[in-house]
Image 1 (cartoon, helix red, strand yellow):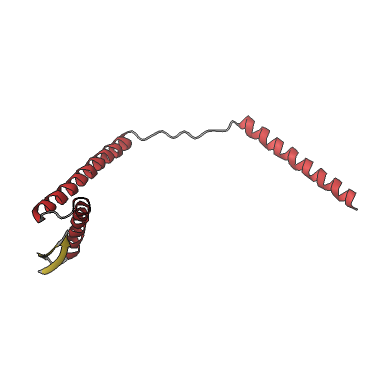
Image 2: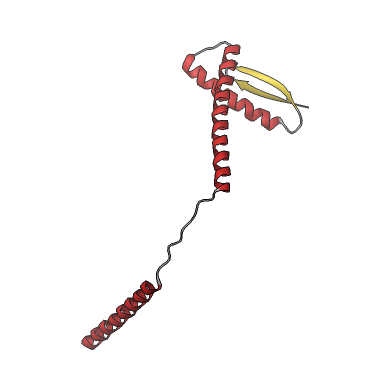
Length: 123
């Protein structure tokens, strides 16, 4: 079992952690310390038990909000899986395709004639 040192607010702690869980404990301590630092910056010196309680409550509130968002997202995913949105791909009528091809051919023909005229004038 490894021991992990960390600081929360203005106090240092050392706690034993199962092998391989040291990083998880460090991350949790960093999150709690970030909340504690925010409290200290707003309220100044706060007794340790109250600081830990307030920081824990702030994290719990954030966690509850994230749970709510995750539940909404899961409901939306389920709804989309049950009723996938219909995607309509516009179909260009064949008459329009033919007209567009004819216009393109005319434009190319006009461009060729214009190039030929410019070439003759340039001689």
